[in-house]
Image (cartoon, protein in one colour):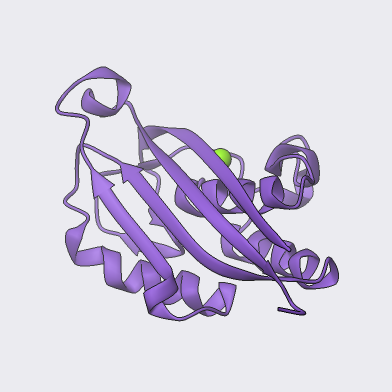
Length: 160
Ligand code: MG
């Protein structure tokens, strides 16, 4: 009754968009472009959970062609996915995520993101890890054309 899931997401950066990561708005001159709020950290975690449940991916459940998800708050999608976790008889054991972003410095925002996500996932702060790295100026992240996020989640059966 243990499961592991992995998620990965990328969004393009653009002027005139809010930068939302883990449900927290981070001051920056660019934000992530997407049909929803483009919160790629939350998207990676959603995909990791769906992966652990073998339930496909975020695009299958919340298609970007559906106007219902236009500007959707990704945290509300995560809440929906958490209902499925419980229905399937699991709880979140822990999450480990890495954000890849050249700028801004994310260190001051890590704790608020962990608190926000741990609340939705109903886990303790010691079970909710978020790390951040740059890509040393290389590739699309390094050129600040976009950001990426990776997440791993483990689930435990409720009976255990
Ligand atoms: Mg996404």
